[in-house]
Length: 291
Image (cartoon, rainbow, N blue to C red; front, side, top):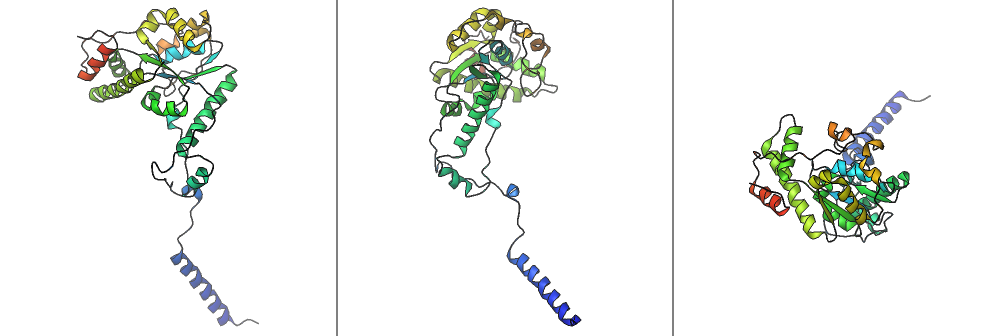
């Protein structure tokens, strides 16, 4: 028969051992709760991995510049897949532990290149599902990261879509319930600066304007088909007869204009709209009349 006093002593020793262990070692957290460990920037740059999509096409534009109209016209072609905005730049890889970067480095990969592989896989998956040959991504924020897209896909092709900056300011102002006019002008200026940089530095990019696209869609889409090396198809101009998915916020324009299925004239810039001097300068450089 056990002595009750000995049992009590043993229980006390076990409890003291647990308390001491907790004092020495903090509670373990799951791997998902561990903070990301970042390798020093520039410490290692991985070489490019093979791509499944060698030459994707990117539409570079500001917001509110007609990129959704351009998308559905291209997507109406039997050989071109132009899905909704894919927002690749917000698709990231998370290296959860400090040794993860070392493990990837041993495979000639780093965080950026892992993201490039993921982006490439997403494009390839969508292209394969469509059964088409060319994929086009028209996400406007791609304009803000075009040098990285060029690094990811050295053989990518680019369509630079311009619109009068004053018309973009007006369109954004009309779209927002409580517009912050100063913030809108800053946003349009940021896009316009990056867009102009791409226009000047991307050798071989195909430049069009939204105004030209709506005024003479056949001529502009014929030029686009020549650039993409596919025959022009009249059905491109009847995009309302094709399925382009749901028009909804964050995936592209969802206005009644685009839902109408008809190409409509571009709305001109408001002559009373106040533009920063740099936006006026860019508008002139792009060939737009500015008072």
